[in-house]
Length: 160
Image 1 (cartoon, rainbow, N blue to C red):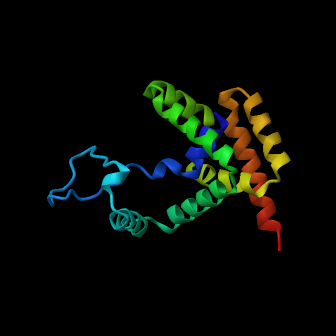
Image 2: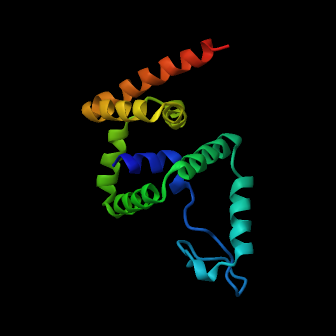
């Protein structure tokens, strides 16, 4: 589930089904998700542009960080991550909620900055932090992550 956490933190699920106009000019019905073959490159680009234009700078920054993290993955890591996302989405909502609750966050700022913090660490440090988190009971994870983030924020603030 580590990869699922990464994917959700990266905002990959932010790109839900694209909304495009139908060829008859009518608006797509709720839940309409055209297959890739029915979406022209121009329509796809316009949908993405519209989404970007309606996003805040913070959301765009999150997206840029997510893209950077995905680009850093090997093809095999991308494949495994995609498989885990599909597995996560197949879970009943009650189980997905349980998984999300286990991730634990003190506040929205922690949730936003956690990926940046983890990305700033060396690979071995990331593995160590992840192992430490997984060894904790779920109810203690949020406080532990928050403490790590507070120490990292203090170090950044003190840096010249």
